[in-house]
Image (cartoon, rainbow, N blue to C red; front, side):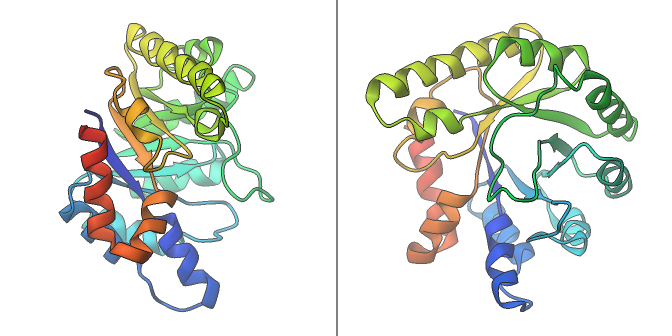
Length: 238
């Protein structure tokens, strides 16, 4: 069974919708850890649309499990990561107009830039993951730039409408997870996963962690965050 990392960005999204100080993502992180999450994820975007720099600083001081900082591979973000020193960084592509991350990082096409970012972050003892599509050339590129792990983008699997299409995308994820392990990389997965599609991904033995946020925060509106997390962990265990 993979471990569950909780993305709490949408707690901050709700806060920013009214420009208040609540709900506090730091408080959500504490509940998530007590409910059994193995770590906390936040995406510090360049436009600061939800998570703020202050949130990341406080989370670094209070998270007891593992803090994963998602960010673009820019000079500004690299310096922030080197200063705050989260347990791990996940480099993701980022466009200001997107609602959420739309695809994997083109490590192969940005080999030199990503390589510099990975090297600079790892100098501070921070593990680096690369969020990539389930494609062998991207996995090979991730290994070439000495990333510690990859996070396989499961969006195409999650968005598949028919069972046949879903199976095709699931096989891509499986092959990518196996390839990542063969290259000595840690293998994580995430994007679009929810209570009705997580079991198949969670059953892939090569996957170490799953990153889930939107579905859990959405369910928490109705049943509370503690139960929403425990329900997801139970599904992953089955």
